[in-house]
Image 1 (cartoon, rainbow, N blue to C red):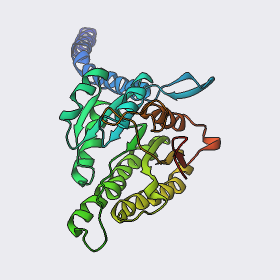
Image 2: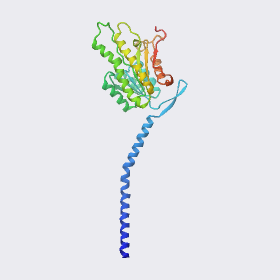
Image 3: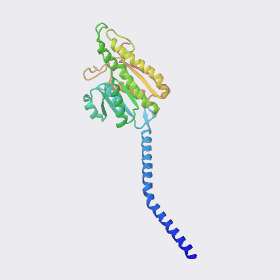
Image 4: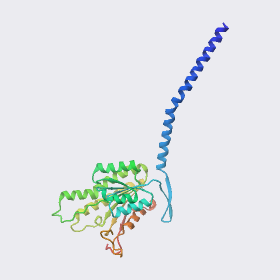
Length: 294
């Protein structure tokens, strides 16, 4: 009887030991997927936190807190004001994305400041969506978006081409709506950002034989004013810039008397508004040379 009791105990011990050995053998294989999943989650979380980090910088003699990884999209980029904006924002350690119908003309600027180029017709819904999707992928969600495109079509009301008029208004105004929509969809969840529109004196006063340009620019200003009231309570700064005067360029340089707007100085104003304290936001600012008539 004692023999069978002892034998039974030994058999149970051996079975238990084998089960233990089996568990010890299989446990690492079971834990590896769990550990890998945990590591990937931690890594993803750290990446998200890194993209949300803020730094303190000195701006106009004051220290302000800004996102560490800011991205700027400039739509309708060219060799004038857009180039000045791109160079300045790059010195602010921003990732800069330049969008234009013809990006070949921006190749030299891209090499100079190391920025991204994306082909985009701002009046095309799919191309604007693609612009923002690509920016999300290669940089980050934009902190500031600037809309510069405009189309001039001069002529008296009796002779203006309706089809060309439609295209001009789509470029100057409708494209701004498409760009602002994509920008807002990204900035609202983030709870911050700036959307700036480049206007003209034609947006506040009409001129003879300039009805098409006026329609586009008046519409642009109305869009900016409405969005400022809609989005600023959500901590998104919307502003409209009235450029009242000619801008100095290589083709048309200033004579040294400051009779033309300096694009580098205009760019500084854009940056100032982007860094402006939300306790005293401006929704519109007019820029003109000292000799320009009101």
